[in-house]
Length: 353
Image (cartoon, rainbow, N blue to C red; front, side):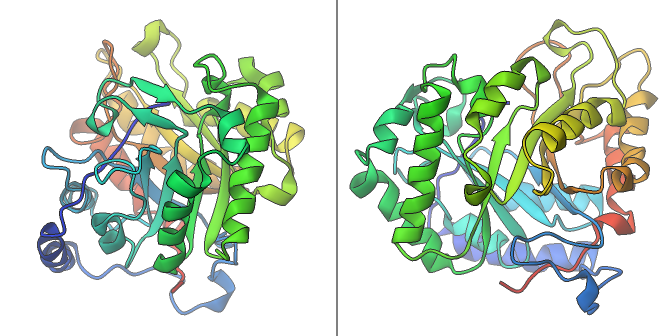
């Protein structure tokens, strides 16, 4: 799902955020894992957890652009701390949406992994509210045109942060071609340029995620968009059970919604790279509400049969259109998601760096 995001950070909220950390700890208990202290389950340098998978989510910012508050509220609902928080940024460089590793992200990153999606666009509304944007253009990015003004300041912020972060450049790149971002070859050049720019500036704390929709109707485009194994640490895919959302009619259980794209990416892009379900969710079935609960409770049983899927990141935001509430904020969806997240497969020891 392209176009989702944001954050504006007032430094004054930092103290509030720190207080919220304590409140969360008191509310849901100290986060622990079945493998804590077991070196066999420690993640490797690519942040791959060998004994299971990360449990994460994208949570929208609240009305005053706080991220800490809604993340903590969501964690209280699901009865656990998220392993991974996924956020989105444009390349405006502004405080609201274009600053990577905002104060709120840094607070959350103290005891969570961070996944930063960085788009080569400038959003026309705060937090990309209406999904309209200006494309900077992959060929322009690849040429170095935006290095000094846009890329380098944010790259240095990530370097200063020190802890490892996941970074995705122009997630769902296959959907961006028709939006005017450029050709597959231009995307590959832009991706490689960004990757090399991080290296030139001495950044060693980025784990690179190449993210496509996983929609198999875009199979040829996805092949052409792959930057190569030397530039990619993880492969991300964004697949959903939309059901009645977007005028679809077929219900796909969790397995059927994820396995075809997982298998295709392993067979056609790389059998060596771990897979991230970088966005996943199900729409509800108004006539059979329990279906949404059961969709989520099935995840722990399916996960070991997708052994290279090492991160599960829920898309917890409604999107425009009837039947498109993809959240698990209440009802059967929350019940199922909460149950799935308690499984030991999704309780792995976080790295210190």
